[in-house]
Length: 418
Image (cartoon, rainbow, N blue to C red; front, side, top):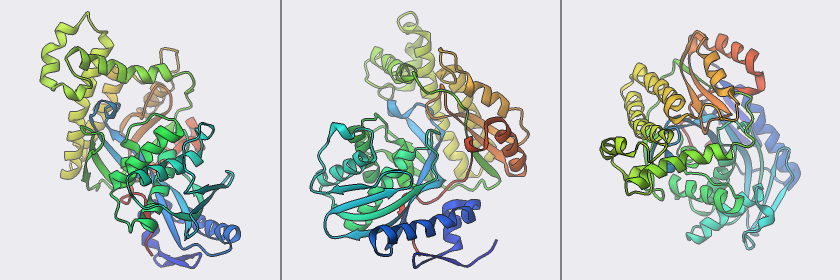
């Protein structure tokens, strides 16, 4: 692999820096820096001071556990929101994202407005409001951004945007001292309160921390994060958008946490995490006929999935690839049989069909539904020796724009060091 430096807007980045961010796609991503640097100078009349990057994320194991205070194994990945940024002293934030209208926000006017629900302006204002309420510093900046985090593919494009805003404020107005969990909570607050989208904390935490992490949500305000050193370099990662229709699936998604909580409430708790696994299994037979069979199966999935998260994390730490792949495959099987989120009762079976197809491809070592399920994406771990043949087959079936070839990224949302 070639070495050397690339210059963008007067900044020189080593090739190793770009490879750390984008893996094998370093050369493909390199032109984005020059484009943003030129846009920043054209729009704001000066060269950018810094580049910031915020990755997307994948959920490796831990399907539908976070909302009941469970455990998740997640990873930052090699797609990102990239920003050319400069601080400014007048308290104004101006952001121009590719293909979106420019935004201008005064940090002295960040109150919630219903008319801004669902907008990027709302996300920025929400992060600012959280910082200000917590006593953290805020201030102005200019930024030109573009993103290659695929939207609607379950890898958290909105959280990636939130975290790049949080990290800019962290670096420029807090001396880089804010913790990843603080920045994640600010981003979740922005999404929940200002943007109007209910979400857990998994996406933001994975993006803020970087690398592969076990996240334990026993305390939602202060999740425990344990990092795992990813060294399975012979495995490639694909996220595949299966083409399913997400419309009218709200009831399907909502039923999962509701049914899990119904089991917890029947046993005197609010969430399944409040009930010890042995107490659930001891009482399970007595709950039959009182709760739906599916609710009990989903509770079984929850408890077993927490164990699989621990097994997968230990396998990574021990370099036991076979055990890791077994945990991922078991997670996928449990999602199909017990969690039952591969397809909606309304009839969309795109995820089930995509997983069946992936299972016919030589080199696919592990497969599972990715994210919420019912319609959406699948996650595959593929032997590097079969990477190109698998990728070609996936593209032929699902289209080039729906197949995302990814790698684990060790850094979370950050200012890119020279």
